[in-house]
Image (cartoon, rainbow, N blue to C red; front, side):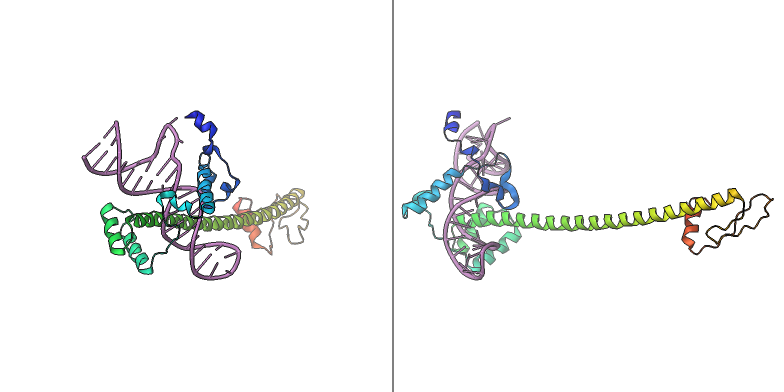
Length: 209
DNA sequence: TCTAATCTAATCACCGGCTCGGTGATTAGCTCATTAGA
C-alpha cells in the first residue's frame, strides 16, 4: 500500500489553485484531494466523444435545472426538516417526478450552501462589530490625548502658582493673581481669577486647591 | 462486527446571461468520514 502511495502520490499533489478556493477551505494541510483522478475524468470526457459518459455509471452529462415548482416543494421540505430520511426522500422524489438520488443531492447541496450563507452572515456581523470597536478605540485614544494635554497645562499653571507663592513677592502670575496678604505675614492663598474654570476643576480633582 | 446508506467538504461542469455566479452532480473520506440496522 505504501509502495502504491509512493508510485501514485495523489494524496500529496499540491495545486497552487487550491489556495484560491472559496472560503479558503482547501488550503488546509491534508486536504489535497486526489485531483488527478478528476483530471483524468475530465480528460476522458473531453477526448472520448461521449466515452466519458460511461464513467460514473453512464450518467447524463447534460444537466437539467429543476423546475420552479420542484424547487419550491424541495424548499418547503427543507424548511420543515433539513435532514432527509429515506421515506421522505422516496416520497418527495415520487411526488416531484425525480430520482431519489437527485433529491438527496439537492438536500446535500442545500445544506452546504445554507451553511455557507450562515457563515457569511456571521462573518459580516463580526466584521461590523470589529469596525465599531476600532472606531470606539480611536475616540477613546483622542479623548485620552485631549485629557493629557489639559493635564500638562494644569501642571504648568500649578508650577507657576507655587513658585509665586514661595517667592512671596505677590508678583502677578499670568497677570491675574492678586496676593491678599501682607509681605511680612504668612502666605495666604491667592485670589484666583481664572478665565477657564476647567483648570480649577482639574486642580481640585488632584487636591491641589 | 459488517455493510449500506448517508453525511460533509471540496470540486467539477453546465448554463444563462455577460464574465461569472448559481446549481446539479461527483468524489473522497487515510491512525480509512459517520450512522443505523441486521
